[in-house]
Image (cartoon, rainbow, N blue to C red; front, side):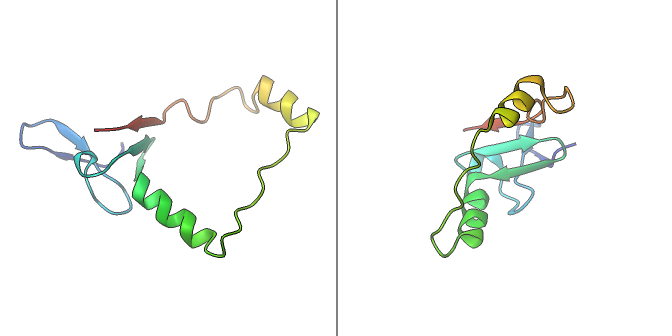
Amino acid sequence: MANSISGKDGKREMICSFCGRSQSQVDQLIIGPGVNICKDCIDMCYSALYKDGNAPEPPRATPERRAAASRGHSGVDPLADVNIMTP
């Protein structure tokens, strides 16, 4: 179960697994199976990984990759349980 807290009205409110802020305290919260991350934490991680300013070039879509993407690697969509929440 993804991290959540009880709000004042008794409803469950999702929180970022990294910084602990609730969905009402952040611009966006990506909710996945068992883990949540807010946009601020994503931005901080991206900056830490690419602090030299050189983001890697995205992989090229080769015919093999296109074929694999169209049939699915395992038949399961890895993003099926991911939700992006905005307040």
